[in-house]
Image (tube, rainbow, N blue to C red):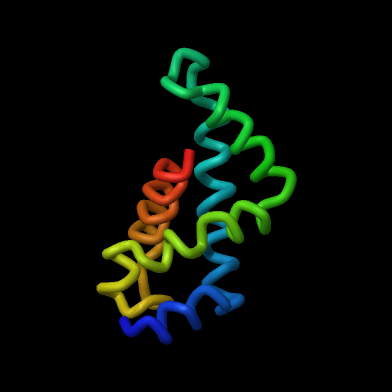
Length: 96
């Protein structure tokens, strides 16, 4: 994808909605993980904040998500849900 296409994807509302769902899905996973998980306090804070305000989580990770190899290879919005989930989780883990 070109830089322009990648930038436009960050503004695509349907794509942002899909990223929001992936963020909430990951947040639910984190809430259920054991407290002995490395960096759990940081992760649980992110998860709780995401469950309250998923749009903030999207805003914070969208630039990283759209640059993920799977998203780029799929041409953006055509990325499959499993690949998008992986891109979101990878992005969040980079940011935490």
